Length: 246
Image 1 (cartoon, rainbow, N blue to C red):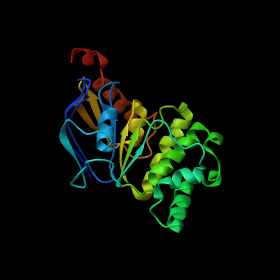
Image 2: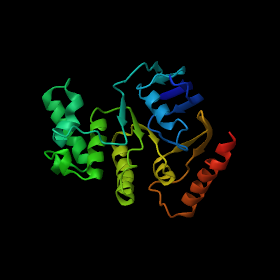
Image 3: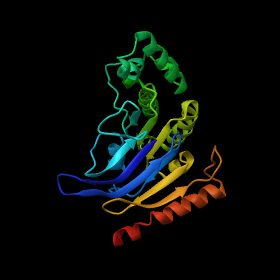
Image 4: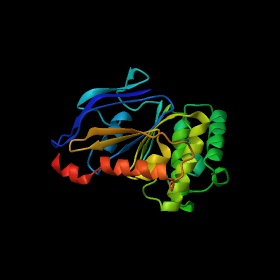
C-alpha cells in the first residue's frame, strides 16, 4: 500500500530531518510513529502525503511513485482547519465538487452519521466543541474514501477524556472500510490503543530505532498488565538519555 524507500530529508536551512528511513505499510494496517520532538515524525508524514519532497529516496502508493498530493491519500492535521463561514455539511463536502451533487450529499450524510454529527450538519464551526470540530476534520478526510489516511497528532489539543473517546471512535469508523492508517503521536497509550505496529524514531536526523508489533486483542484496556508492559517497552525504546548520546 505505502512504501517509504530510503527516505532522507534536508531542508534549505541545512537541517537534516531524516536519514535513510524505510517503511512498508500494508493495506488496512494501522501504524503509529512515535519519537521525541524533532526526530522527523511529522516531516515523514508530510512526505508520505506528498506535501514535502524527500531529498533522497522515493514514496510509492500501490506501487506507483508519489510526486505530490494524491486522491487516494487523506490527511488529518493537529488543528481541524475548518472554514468558519461554512456549515459542518459544507466543510465536509468541500472536496467533492467534481462529483454529482446527489453523490456529494449521499457521501456527506453517511460520513456525518459515522462520526456522530448528523444532527449538527447545519451548525457553524464556532458552535462546536474542540472534539466535535476534530470529528468534522476526520469526516472531511473520510468522505473522499481514501485508501490511506494520515493523521498528524489529531487529538493532541483535546482534554484526556475527549481524546480517549475519539481514539475509540476512530477505530469504530476505521472498521467500516478499513483504510490504511498512519498516525503520528507523542501519546504512547494512544499508539497502543490504535496501532497494529508502532515505529520508534530516534536521533537528529531521525532514523527508525525499533519497530514494535502490538499483539493485543481489540478493544484494548489501558489498565491491563500486558498493555502496561508494552508501554514500558516503548518508554525504554524512547530513552531520552540515549538520545543525548546519538
